[in-house]
Length: 217
Ligand SMILES: Cc1cc2nc3c(=O)[nH]c(=O)nc-3n(C[C@H](O)[C@H](O)[C@H](O)COP(=O)(O)O)c2cc1C
Image 1 (tube, rainbow, N blue to C red):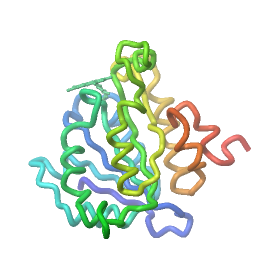
Image 2: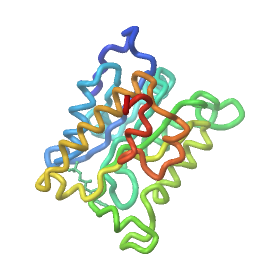
Image 3: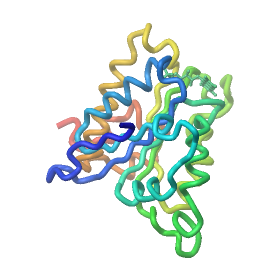
Image 4: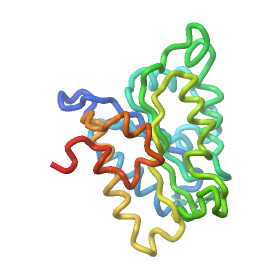
């Protein structure tokens, strides 16, 4: 099964969270697979592995639109590939965010939903600066997705990012990131995320204590 939902009917669940995961070579993944496995254990998250569900890119538009309708928070989880998403996530956007559903005069289906990206990037954080190797910040590179969220009426949050992902395991940084991820997901389900702050920060990662309401108490 490429979709796993747990505890969606629980009375404790105040936000329905949809995680759309895209990684084309999971057997070689050191970070995303750990994040995805952790997410599957969080009660109240619907986890969808797009490459596993649609190995031939035959995306079921109605099913995906229904998934969007059924959730309050939408997350794209992916490794950064050529400063963008792996291709299936672009295909998913091209097919699922249809005129009359996600945009256009009567296309109001996903207005008001919360949306963010959970990303791993091989490059280091200092490379993702105006004067750095990659010239742009991650938030800037994600502008097409941010504007897609804006056009469709979703509230766009800053990304949750792990930089230097290809050396993160050997440097012992994966576990801490997975722990933060679990905290964020649990707070999302419980409706304890400060949405204004999540929108305005450059990144959610590194700012969890501020973003999660009551995290310090
Ligand atoms: C086709 C391809 C393109 C990539 N493009 C980028 C990129 O544009 N920027 C970057 O920082 N890392 C890039 N990387 C590195 C991946 O982001 C990195 O391998 C991934 O985040 C590691 O996560 P994983 O252990 O879950 O696979 C690319 C990797 C591949 C295979």
